[in-house]
Image (tube, rainbow, N blue to C red):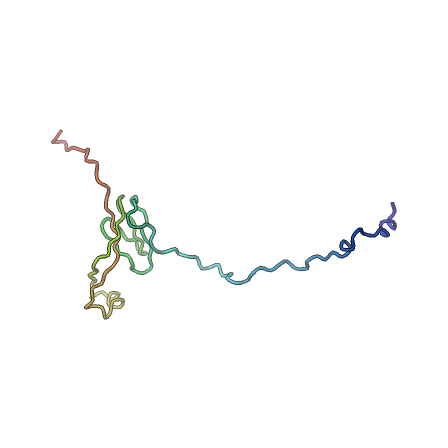
Length: 138
């Protein structure tokens, strides 16, 4: 077949003759493109009544919102963690701040005559199995 013959054949449909392609890609939304801020997910990690192992993180915080209680340690960044395995108990206890401390004066100024309550994380250790005997008793 010659090239001239192919040029004379008409398309079957008039829509096939007019094909238009996109000149640009579709643009997505440009809002909220700042991905530098990463969420910190602070707050409670373990609820009241759950069983935890030693070293388990109980709560993360920026300010001193939760306080360490029995068998609970506090990291330098305010993270509360379990020091022994056991059951988590969250209590609301009376807070006795050191009024001479500067940050206590700044945060609790004007509340010296009020009773302040704070949340304390406590770990109740699992009961021991009591199978050990002293050498003198054997």
